[in-house]
Amino acid sequence: MNDNDYHPPLMFGNGHIQTIYPIVFRKVNDVSYTRERITTPDRDFLDLDWSRIHSKRLAVISHGLEGNTTRAYVKGMVRAVNLAGWDALAWNYRGCSGEPNKKLRSYHNGATDDLGLVIDHAASSGDYAEIALIGFSLGGNLTLVHLGRDRVNPKVSKAVTFSVPCDLEASAEALTKTSNTLYMKRFLVMLHQKIRDKMKLMPGALDDTGYSAIKNFKEFDDRYTAPIHGFDSAEDYWRKCASRQFIPEIKIPTLIINAINDPFLPKECFPVAEAGYNKNVTLEMPKSGGHVGFISFNKEKIYWSEHQVTCFLNDHC
Image (cartoon, rainbow, N blue to C red; front, side, top):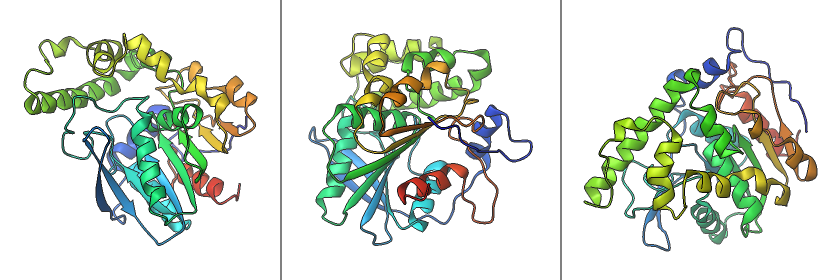
């Protein structure tokens, strides 16, 4: 375990400011994608966004809950890894690319089959000798679960994750706090739109009657996530898909960065013991950074988190 020396800009030390500022104000305009649609084994689809510099090394980037490849934190990371000599593949989860997916199932914290499919698809091209994984929040949890539980493509050599809710139940509880009401409401509004989209696509398959009574992830996951994806309850889903239990089994160099002042992460989401058991895993816990924040102001427009990734991937740390 390493404590890192991230120092936020003046007036940006608060965890909520760190979290909200990049969402509202950060713009990354110098990244362009080439989109590819691939078919899943269950005849659904995934939209992949490529940013190639003709490298033999590829970074696969997984976004957070209700995110997509257009978010500033994803595009900022794409630009950073390109500048560091890596191709980038940012992928959209089912239903996150601007078009509802074809199946009732969606994405969730344990849906690693789609991540594995994306990795294997990229590896099968023959273009890459090395693949790294980068994940934010839910995408970080997904990455760690995949690395510790699944068959991992042999070309995957390293991973970096940020702001990971390693204990899903504890994180869900943290988001019920009054100080996190804004975030919880925002997530529920976006998730409701996903439900509405599916209702139009599949009449009768879902019902949003009384949705306004849902106030937290417990109620949402009990009603939708768990039954749709084969879990007994929200607690069963959280227990089976929390990455903390899989960290001791990770077999490649992996960096986990969770900020102490992240409003989404209680103490249970800092896997000190689990990282300590595994020589392949490094846990960094900077005092500041917020949730997927880590703001930096510099002429290169590179955030601290992006510098950490390129440093780790290129063995410069």
